[in-house]
Length: 445
Image 1 (cartoon, rainbow, N blue to C red):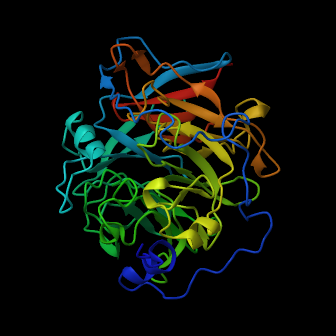
Image 2: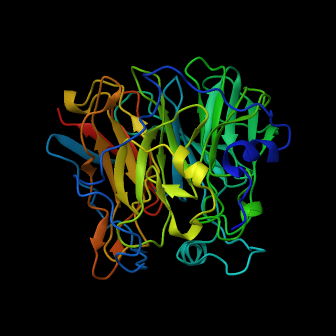
């Protein structure tokens, strides 16, 4: 079989205009390196064989939240509505002054030049509005009473915005096709000036993985950009996925672009572990291998690392649909640390660095799971918590915010969680893009 070029590690970098040809250096710090192996998913039985069960389709129907109903948190926590009547609030960014920025954007139908438009993209878009608000809204809770007094349209005229960050005197936005930056001063309530495009990003294909997250390094010297794949397992050919399924690193002015890590099908949530300052990401993995393949995962990200997509999954398990094509990359594939369950659409990620929650939650990771479509029984549709100790996972994911599923038999859900963020007062904010709300989870007092 014809071998494909080293597309997802070196070729991905070369394919992007202006990208440095230098390979990312290997991180030799033992604390930041991802392990070569991981525990078998869900308690030791190991992964099932591909196609052990048929590939299923079970799409949810959003019915909205009845008056007075909220998601459910563990005993000792209180769930309230932080904001409502938003239009597909996907992601949040918490500024140093406590302002909460909300990206309102959505999947929109796209055409594909490849034969056989991906079923996932078509059916997902039909179940949604097929429009995108393309704006960022500012929420400000100055008196810290858990309810924002100010709600202001902050920025419009965007193209499916998602990730946001502030570095210096600039506000950055990850559009689906580019990274933009805007002149900004702390406390500013609106931006009217035109932004500067500092980085082009690839789009096209069925492009259900349109989200582009941004994360600044702790010292502000770098910005990391997540770019999901254009396909399930590169079934439309390598060109459509060139420069995708990776995390990029750039300087704040857009220069110095390089591939930081590759082989990550859809790395959406990114955050720094509070104590070790290691980069972690939540990855939305591939479909159509059966009910229990492939698990989404949480992993630390090694500079120069390759995480398998599309040739291997969860370490060095070769995908039968790409069998024999790149045995070298299969052998290089890094196994993730935490199994988040198959088809859960694990997207949101926020480490809990505050102290308002009980000790067992501190330093751990909260993950928003948007919910399955490629499984005979629903999975995801909740927020889970992964405990950490000494900078490493210290237990399996546990349910934290549930109650999004109204009736599985009728496939009805109230909403679908995506982004998670820690508010300045230590409460957890959860963006419910289908319920058009942001939920606030606070420790009961």
